[in-house]
Amino acid sequence: MKCLVTGGCGFIGSHIVDRLIDDGHEVVVLDNFSANNEVFYMDDRANYVKQDIANYPFTRTFYDGVDVVFHLAAESRVQPAIENPIQAFEKNVLGTAVVLQCAREYGVKRVVYSTTSAAYGLNEPPNVETDKTDCLNPYSVSKVAGEEVCKMYSNLYGLETVCLRYFNVFGKRAPDAGQYAPVTAIFNRQKKAGEPLTIVGDGKQSRDFIHVQDIVEANLLAATAELKEFGEVFNVGSGTNYTIQEIADKIDSENQKYLPPREGEAYTTLADISKIKSVLGWEPKINLLEWIENGQK
Image (cartoon, rainbow, N blue to C red; front, side, top):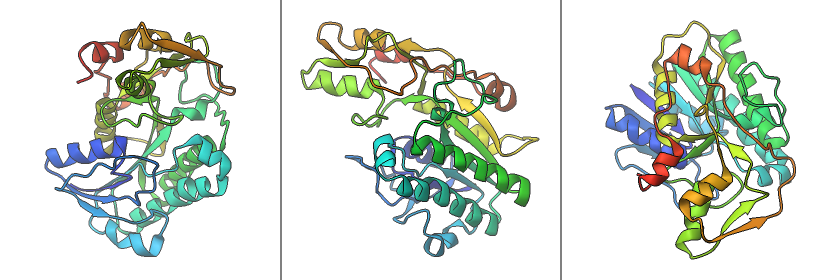
């Protein structure tokens, strides 16, 4: 296949790019390098285009001949989205609409859209795709709006779309700073620097963690599976959770300190993954605690 990956220089996107190329596919990456990352990951076997996904006139021709689009580019940082909601909506709603329109115009077969479990907000876990959304900030509102745009393009225009709601993603290349940095990466950075691991609240809050390679597998299945319905949303989590204290103790049980709890955060996240198992035949393979014990390989 010829594949286009938006946001393909970031944490998750770069892993998808590498896997697609390893599997023999041609890959074009659209990325404007605007994320607040210290490192952007590039594979010299891919074709990179530095451009904003929302720039319709300058990006549309790159969809020519593309079979599948993996759409990961987004404003994914909560605080910047709160401070500048217009920019978040431009990237996450308008940007998604431009991606879908370009895909439609150039006959792309399918678009796989990366979205977020933040859609569930403070809903009681385990969260199932039929739960009512509970968006707490411009980031989650804009990502859920992107889901609705995908559904509309499937229903109105016949464009095949699949939406994947990620829970807490961990693995190599994960950012180690910011609110959406996986706690494993933050703890690793702190341990390497000889600093205490900072545990927010009492440490008893629990999260559903999913490895980035399991995310890659979900994307590939979503891109190729024979589906009866499109515009559908699928949870991508492990279906189990661990407390922050458990994770901290695995990484460094001696050097820890506690910070005040953050307001507006769910105390527990947990994915119901029955749908993605039954429809896509996907199951998570990498366990968080085993990954830490095995040297995070």
